[in-house]
Image (cartoon, rainbow, N blue to C red; front, top):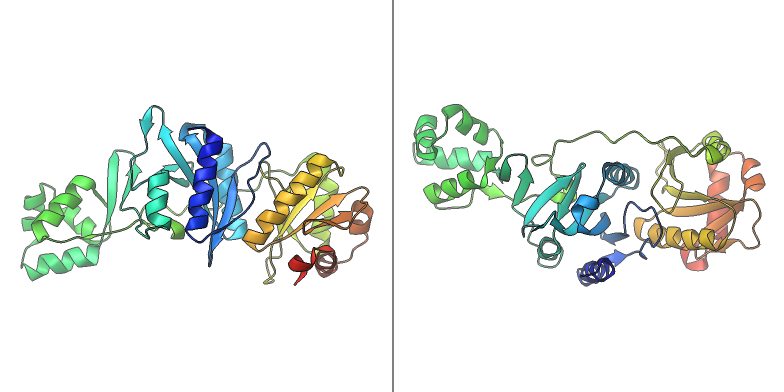
Amino acid sequence: MSRSALVGNVTAMLSDAGFVVSDRCAIRPKSFDVAARRGNDLILVKILGNIDAFNEATGLEMRRLGAHLGATPFVIGLRSRDEDLKPDVVYFRHGVPVFSPDTAYNLFIEGVPPLIYAAPGGLYVNIDGDLLADERKQRDWSLGRLASELGVSRRTVSKYEDGMNASVEVAMALEELFEGDLTHPVDVLDDEDDVHDDEPTPDDPEADPNDADLVATLVRTGFTVHPTTRSPFKAVSTEEDRNEEPVLTGHSTFTKAAKKRAKIMSSIGHVARTRSVYVVDDASRESVDGTALVERDELEAMDDADELRAVIRERAEPEEAL
């Protein structure tokens, strides 16, 4: 299957699952292919035939964007090396969850989250430690008795009851011993701490030297600017102490390529519930599909973030300005 066909299939599946899906980010380089929202769940999705093409720089950018936009980053792929990704298994690459289209279908269409995740050493599941302890005590089994049945140490059983995850083999043995399911699914939409250690948001990269003056101006007006390196926008600008939507920010000469980026920014903004502004030296129009165009000199004359936000709202397309 070609990558284009795979992207089409995944986006169609997300639409069938009730997600509003952005236009495809048909530019390079790009950290994600589409943004999608269903209710309060916002996801950024990278779609690959071979997940080995997913590098660290892209993973770091997706994680930063997830933090700044309140989104969960995902990679949906078919294989790693020459081996297909196993169904209903969550993998991780550079801190980002990875799974197959079948797993995505079960999660988003069927509402059945995966139970298994891959980590160094094999495949693992989340054990419900409280339920395990209750079942053991109901049978009047000691830690030692259960440890003997499983072929592990008493300390290991105690750790299971304290929330340590177990191998698939141990989980199956527990299910057989207690004649019931003692696991709980991998909640990838909530960045499941039981599966993947809660890592801090990666530091922002340095801004492009050509954008240094623009960044300084945005900071002066009250924004915190988070530069990007692999997105259709140059930065995500936020106001940390105010409940205002983030602003996707672009900057370049207003060319056909800039117009294309502005359209993508608008589509992403519609899904991610952000505003978007593209700063140019000379503008012959006020907006591109809801992305406001602001001339550099005009921006430099603004006093604060409220003034810029007012301009963005005024210049957005009517359906965006409501």
